[in-house]
Amino acid sequence: MKALDSKDKQILIILQKEGRISVAELATRLNLSDTPCLRRIKRLEQDGYIQGYSARLDAQALALDVVVYASVRLTENSDSYAEQFEQQMALLDPVLECSVITGAHDYLLKIVAHNLLEYERFVKQSLGSLKCIASIESTVVLKQTFSRHQLPIN
Image (cartoon, rainbow, N blue to C red; front, side):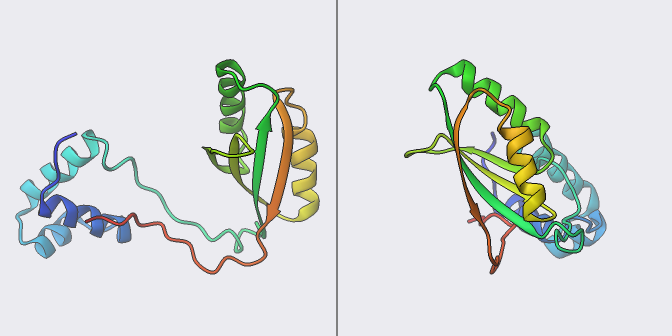
């Protein structure tokens, strides 16, 4: 990846907060003309700094009132079990995040559900059916005080 200069960093900072900003408005804020600004955006996309654009939705407005962090331990610490597990997690819509972690567990999942009964069904039917899982330890979020979506860019 190409090194970022101050204008590139400014573009990333603004786009993280205002993904729908027009190129013309972005260029004005950065004291650039439209064409060079658009070229920079395209390069940042091609270089992988910008992975995509999306709308941030309110989970509670969609009645997804339960957030659970599930710590998962696999039955075997092998590449094949890890690959099988990761592929299965990618197919499950309630799983928002899947991270390999250190410690007593192998993975940390962030899962959403409409209620605890739905989460229980999900664990029993979806996660519980996978033979590669040895144990699941769930931590239910009582209240989320904040969530950042912007990465710190220095």
